[in-house]
Amino acid sequence: MVTRSDWAGAQKVLYTLVCGLKQQIGANLKAEVLCGKYDGTLIPELEKIGVKVHVVNDLVREISPIKDLKAFFKFTKYYVRQV
Image (cartoon, rainbow, N blue to C red; front, side, top):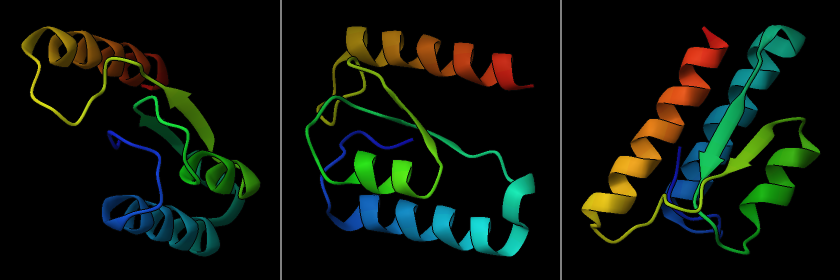
């Protein structure tokens, strides 16, 4: 999960981790990423390597108690669905 989808520090680290895990584990790895709404490079790059991306509009970088709570519940919904 990352708040923005531009191509900066945290996004590059996330991409590198997912890419490395996919190379090591292969088809058995089911990776999905949640990111905030931002028109950036991360989303198409992840989709190129077969990672499903969910855009969560309430996942923002700035502290926002209401949006943070909404994003938490959306994250919980995705997580519970996967378990």
